[in-house]
Length: 294
Image (cartoon, rainbow, N blue to C red; front, side):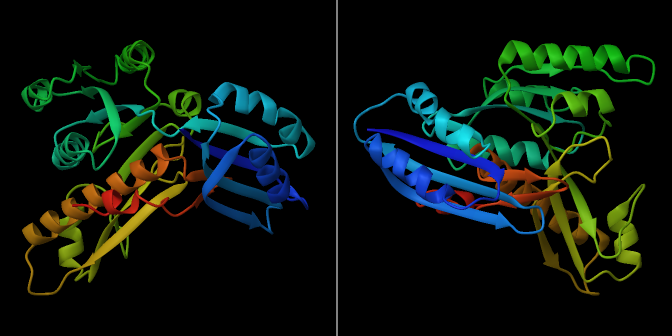
C-alpha cells in the first residue's frame, strides 16, 4: 500500500471535506490522519490529509482524478508521496551549532531529509561536511560579487534538485530577487528576545538588560529581513545568576531545536502560508516522537 499526503488551500465553502473524503473513498483510499482550518477573516480553508491507497493507485493518477474536485472549489491542491525524502540544501557561515544538529538528526533518522549539499561563504566546516559524504560548496560573497555569488547558488540549487534551502546561521542577506524566486522554499533561524536586540553581540545586550527569556524564531525568508511568515518559535528562561556565555549556549540550543522542528513541519507538508502568517498543523501519528528528539 502506498502512503500519500494531500494538501488543499481554497476559498471557504460548504462541502469541501465531504468532497475530499468522498473522492478518496471512491478511489479505494483509507484516511489515516486529517487536519483542517477555516480562516474566517481571510475566508480561506486549509486542509492536510494523510492516507493510504489500498488499491495501489499511483500519485499522478490520484492527482489527475482529483482535478474536477479541485476545479469545483477553486483549490490549490497537491498530493505528495509520503515516503519520498525532500532534497535540502544547507547554508552556513561561521556558527556551526545548527549545521551540526541537522547533520546529526538526519544521520539518525530523526529528521528524514536528503541533504544534497552545504553552501558556505567560509571554509570552517568543509572537513565536517565532507566527512559526512555531503558535497561542500564554497561561495565567497562580497558587495562587488553578490550577483555572481547568487548565480552560483542557484546553479547549485538546480543541479542538486534542491527543494528546500535552510539558512543554518548563514550570515549573508539574500537579494529580493532570490527571495521572490524561491518564495516559500527558504527557511531561516534567528534569535528572538523580549525586548529585541539587533546588531553585534545580541546575547550580551540581552544580559546587560536583564532579559528573563531568550528564544529563537524560524520563518520563511522574504524580502523583508527576518520578517517572513513564522513557522516555529520557542523560548528558554534565564536568571540574573547566569553569565553572557550561558545566554549564548542556551540560545544556540533553542535555535537548533526550533530550526529542526520548522524543517520537520515543512518536509511533512504541515505548513501553509496564509498571507503574512502560517497555518501549521500538528504532526501526524508516528512522526511526533522524532520531531521532539534532541
